Each structure stands twice: as C-alpha cells, then as structure tokens.
Length: 439
Image (cartoon, rainbow, N blue to C red; front, side, top):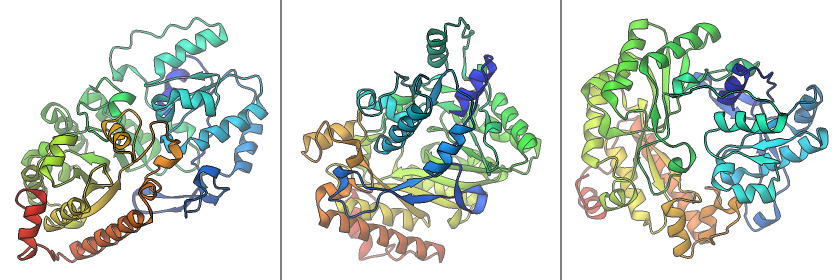
C-alpha cells in the first residue's frame, strides 16, 4: 500500500492514508510490538471452534472517526493480506460504502490476488487488482477518472519511488526495505509465484541509497528486509549491499523476519552479516526430512544448514541470535518428522520457530489436502487459518499440535542454556532413522 501511495503521489495524486494497524499496546525490542486486540463476534462458520475471534489494530470507532476527517476522495484503495483474514477488508468496505456511497472502491493485495472470485462475491468491491499494483492502478484510475496520465517507461523496480513512509504518523518504530520482488523457487506450500512474479532484484546501489536516505530522514536504526529470497545471487546482490552499508558506517540494526536460505550462507556472507549488525536471523529450514524437502522445494539441505550455522558462529553470532523455521501440519506429514526437525535445530544450538501450515489456494499442498479429503476445494478461507486448520483433523490433532509447541519451547529453553538433550545415543540413532540421514 505504501509503495502504491508513493507511486501515485509521484504521478500527481493527493493521497490520504488510514492505517488500520496503527494501534499498538506495547513496543518491544527493535520496534516490534503487539497490536491492539478487540474480541468480536465469531462468524457462524467458526461456531464449533473453541477459540475466541478478535480484530487487531484500531477500533471501528477510530476508523469511522478517521473517515469523517477525510474529504470525499475520487477513489479508495483497500489492501488485503491473508486469505483467512478477509472479514477485515469485508468490514472495511462495508463502512466505506456507508460513508462514501458513490466513490469507487478498489481491492488489492494477497487475498484479492489468490481468491478474486471470492472477493467479488463476499467483499464486493467495484474493482479488483491482482498481483503487483502500480501500473494496474494507474490504468484503472485513468479509466475511472477520465484522466490520461502515462505510466512512464518503468523498466526496473528502481524506477518506482520509495514507499510513502511519511504517511504513517506517530508510530513509525522501524522501517521495511525490499531488495527484490518474488522468489525463483516454487515451494509446495507457498503462493509467492502467484502473487508477485516475475522474480526481480533491485540495483544494490539503489538499495543502499534508500536505506541511508530513510535513516537520515526518519532517525530510525531498525530496518527489516521483507524479501522472500534475500540471498539469491548473493555475490552480486546482498554481499554488495552489505559491503556498501558497512562503508557508510551507519548505526543500523538489520532484521530478516522472512526465512533466509542457509545453502547461500558462506564464510564471507556470514562475516558481512555480523559486521553489518544483523540482529534478527531466521533461517528457512522447514524440515530435516530429505524426502520431504525434495518434495516441497529442495532449496536447502541438512548439510547446508550445518555449514551455514558453523560459518555464522565463526563470524561471531551467538546461539540466541539464530532461529530456524520448522513447519508442521503439512498434508501427509507425520508428527515424528516435526519432532525430529525440531531436535535437529536444537542439536545445532539454534532456537526453533514453529510455522503452522495453512493451505493456500493455488499451491501444491492445498491441492494435496483436497485430494486427501482434509479440506473441500471451495473451503471457506476462514477454516484455513493456521490456528484453526489443525482442528479440521479433530480435537486430538489440535492437542498434539499444542504439545509440539510446548516441546519446541522446552528445546528453546535448553538452547538458551547451551543444552542439547537429544544429541547423544540412544536418541541420536532413532532420530537418524526418522529423518533418513545424519542428525
């Protein structure tokens, strides 16, 4: 949304932004924090789910008040994120219609891209934009408003202006930077290829200039890379970016909440990451089972993970600095595989960060879950929420998932004390049999 705001403003449009995630209850380390939470009525389809239903961010009252402060616009853009969060944009559009009944509403974002027909039927915007939106929105504006503004010869991502961070008022605690869009891999559980392809990387000099400019403008140290494939083409991309940031000698703290590919981490990259002051390092490990990995993506290996961790430690990172995503709940995935993967991570001294599977329309694993009879092809997206999907398998499955989370927390508590409870026999041999290779 901020990229679109910057682009449209650059084309001469006046932009107002209502940030529905503006309300935070507590700011933690590095500018992260909890969003305001308000329990709301549970949708009927979730009546059997023993969980509360909540809205996060600003209250409906604050949203309406902010709408009343805005002059009637020519068009309204609404974004969407996860498919199972569609009640958010649905309710927002309902309130927008009430306040501005004659203004066209344009819906974009992840949900709109993956489930456009569902969005047309349920959210009922006037227009839907799927995929990257800059050029599409400008063309749509020309159609709606009767203007004739040329899009310009955008040949690369660096032809677009920076995100309009200045529109976020009063709670800008960290900044986001994207050095690329898309991902060259095709993981069985991920819909990135459907959302923002083709994969394109920016010029390293342009990335460094953006970070430096935003550091001086907003006086913030924390920058989070939101790339899905930050380390691809490492020697000509991320290594160049980090070298130039180190030369600038800015007191930055860098973060990678999206998973990094361990197989791309060599000694030089690990050293550059440490010298550039990476503070959040999450590795996209997913599973230690080699058969599963070949089936889902094949972008990492157990040996590659071992070598990456070794280089990161040699560079100066401590155990508590390193986390690894482990996925659970995939169709056909045995519990033993998840436990073995978590133990593999613990044996490397890393923190386990569990990622619960959510079936995403258009992905291989969504279709696999349909074939297995776990979900219907036309399932309501609300039922694919990662906190609800395990209950589709019954109460026992949900309780098992809860116990896995407790087990992972126990491993993390051990890792903080440099304790690896399953690193020796008789546990080691059993784990080797489960994962089909060395631990």
